[in-house]
Length: 295
Image (cartoon, rainbow, N blue to C red):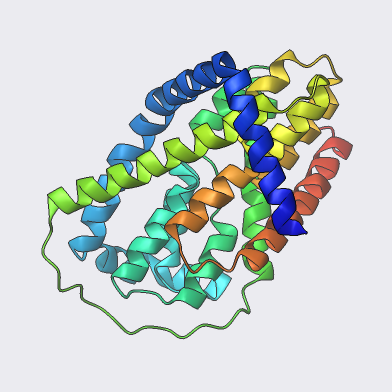
C-alpha cells in the first residue's frame, strides 16, 4: 500500500513538472542563486580549513587542550568541542561533514557520531539572522537564534549518558592532499544544492492556495524559503515568532536528507526524536522569555 502511494505521488509531481515548467525553472534559478550567494561563501572556506586542520593533526593538539572540559559536561569525546564550536558558526549540514571527517580518520566511532549529531544541529547564524530580520527586530532575531542554540545544548545534556567506546587514537598518518579535499568539498556543496532544489520544487508545485498552510508545510521541508516566506504572511507577529522557532528547531527534511547523505549510518529515529524534543524545549524557553518580557 505504501509503495503504491509513493508511486502515485511520483506520477503526480512528474505531471506537475510538465504543466508548471515556469515555476520549476524559476525555483531552480532562485535556489541556485541563494546557494551561490549565501551558502558557498560561508561553507567552502570552512570545509577546506577544517579538512586541513584534521589531516594535519592540528585537531588533536587543539582538542587535547580544550576537549577535557567539554567531555566532563556532555560525557562526550574531546573531539566534540571541535564539532560543537564549528556548528555554531557554519550550522547544518556542516556538522555532519565535520563528524564524517572524524569518522573517516578513526577519531570517533558511529555511536559517538550519532550522539554528537543530536546537539550540534545548529544553523548558520548570519544566514538565519538575515532571514529573521526580514520580519522581526534585530534583538528578537538574535534571541530566537540563542533559544535554538540553548535547546541544542539541553539536548546534549539530556543525552549525555549515551555510552560509547572511546578510541585512543592520537595521530593521523595521512598526507595532506589538497585536490582530494577540494573535490570532497565540492561534492558536498553540490549535494546540498541538489537537495535544496528538489525540496523547493516540491513545495512550489504543491497545489495549495492557502499561503499559511503552504508555509507551514514548507517549514517542515526546507526552512530557508519558509523563513523568507514569513515576511509576506499577514499574521500576528507572535505567531511568526512561534513558527520561526518550530522551523529552526526541527530543521526541515531537506537538512535531514543532507545529513543522512553525508553520514550514511545515521540513527535517524534517534535524530528525529530529538529534533521533535528540541521543538518542545524551544517553545518552553520562548514561553519563559515571553513571561519575563524578554521577547
